[in-house]
Structures are given as C-alpha cells and as structure tokens.
Image (cartoon, rainbow, N blue to C red; front, side):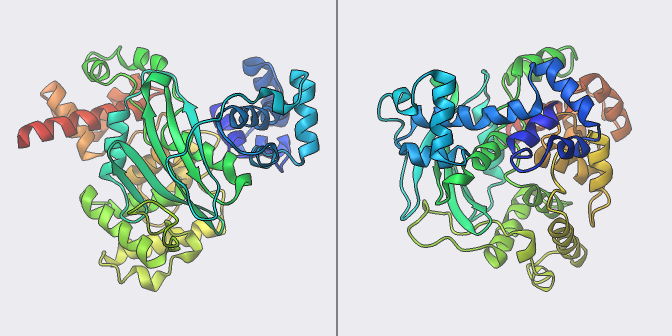
Length: 411
C-alpha cells in the first residue's frame, strides 16, 4: 500500500490504468483494488482523483494564484472541470473557499511564479538532524543549507527553478517556497519535497517499534521524530552513493559538485538565491569521457557513465518496486552497485523504510560504542531483524549517534 500510494502521488494513474499500476507492484488488479478497499475504503482511481482536489483547496487557502492558475497547477484538465468539481463536492464555487491573502513567498524569480505552501507532518519532527544530514552532503551549486534553510535547484524536463524549505514547528509543517515556470509540475514538485523530508512518516509507530530494543531505546529517546532524508531524484542519489564509495562525505560532495558544474544545466543569472548555479545533470547529459576527467578512479567514472546509460534506457528504474528484495536485486545488476550501495539507494532514493546497509562501517562502529562489542556485518544484520520494518530509521539513529560521539571525541 505504501508503494502504491507513493506511485500514485508521483502521478502513476494520471495517464495510466490501474492494471499498469498493479503490474508495477507485482500483483493483479483485483488484488490491488481489494487492498485499497480494505485499507482505505476507496478504489485506487478514487484515491488518485482526490489528489488534485486537495491540492487545489490548499492552493486556494495558502496562495495568491488566480483560480485559473490553481486549476492548472493542481492537475485539472480545464477550468470548467475545476469549477464543476468544487460545486459538486462543496456546494459552492472555488472562489467562495478563498480566505485571506495567502502565505508570503520568501523571494521571487524573474518570469517564474513563486508560491509558498505549508506542508504538514506528524509531530514530533527532528528538523535539526535532517537539515544537518542534508547540509553535510549539499552539492555545491545545486544545494545550500544556511541559517536553518534548505535551498536547491530543481529541474523537470527542460524547465529549471528552485525551492526553499524552512521549519515551522508551531504549525507542524515545513514552509516551502517554490519558484518554477511550469505550474502543471507543482504536484510532482510537492511529491518530491515530501519524499526528501520524509513527511509521510508516522513517528509514533516507528518509536514504539524501535524502543523495544534496549540498545536502540536511548537513541530513539534522544532523537524523537527522526526522519530518513530522501533524495530529489533516484539517479542523483545513486550517483552520490557511487561517488561516496571508500571516500569521505566531504570528498564525495566535492566530486558531485564538479559533476554538476561540468554537465548540469546552468541557472540563469538573477533567477535563484545566491549559491544556486546548476541543476544536477540528467542521465542523458553525462558524458562518459568527460566523467573520467573529474579526478576520480577510472572504475568509478565508468560506473557512473554506465549508471547514466542504464537510467536513460529505463526512466522507471528508481520507481518503488513490489518489495525491498526485488528492488535490491534490480539495483545490484547496475554497474558499480554492490549490496551496500543498493541498500543506501533503496533507503534514500526509493524511500524503503526497511533498507539497511549492514556492512556500513559507521553502523558497525556506532553499535560497538553502544554495546562495548564490535559486531560483524552478519551479526548486526541478525540483530536488525528485530527492527523490521523500520530498519532504515534504526540506521539513521545509529549514524546520528556515531556522528555525535565522533564530535565529542574531537572536542
């Protein structure tokens, strides 16, 4: 159900039939419909059809867009259909739902609409940890993290814009500014922001499960509301993972910046906040020969070039799969992708809650610090059986504990 909803949020039923969605999830259409009726009380197509209505209502309440622009931005095919739907559901026209002047965007771009939306989450929410994680890995030119704000360049097809995300704890939400010249792309942009900041997580369920392990319990208590940072794009996360093999986070970040500057599209002057200069390259933009000139081992450059070819040939390569095992099996077939890298990609690029890179040195070191005994990867994997289906969150707790101890030792 989680995978189905993620695909629907990404637009899987906008142009395809329920049968196609069922095939992508490895089941029959009747089984998929039965699961939706059982868990949501509605058919998949009904759930998909509520998305534009809910987004439109949010845009009416929170933005200054015209109703015509809202109809386009929320995915309605026409203003007439937009008006008819609201009249049918609310017994009044959309204009009657508008109240106030909406949220004020943080800035504006030349020629691009700039809007602000509050994206809600279930509290608690550990903003400091997620913004720290993203900040340590921010790709120069593509992302910035400063003064508690996350900003990045975004690109869909040939259109380029930017986003800014700030925490609003009193409102249990993230205030998101979007500057993009294609309003029809807004649903996809919001879905990606929700994925990056893990806004669909249920922290109470995760806390209750992981707190049962006496080793993890203190970590969970210290970091309530910890989220797993996702990725803007599966290809980008996969490239980051390959670049990070056997080198430091800072070194991988620098190489990713070189890659973006060499192959990514340039942001026009004056259209984005300071520090945002390039979009992360699309797979078709990565030149195999050019990657080899960026100062990385030849085998790693070949892996990135091969990865770009694979993703270009299969644009759905990083879509959610029918289960974690299926996703990992597919990923390890890619050039330069082993078990650790595949688990990391599944965790951040596919939002797999149960992904767990057991051989990671940071996880092993953190568990050793907590228990006084250094486990093997196999022993850690066996212990992690009790953390299912939230092993990705357990990994984040261990990484966070390891980073805190490393910082304490340095001090």
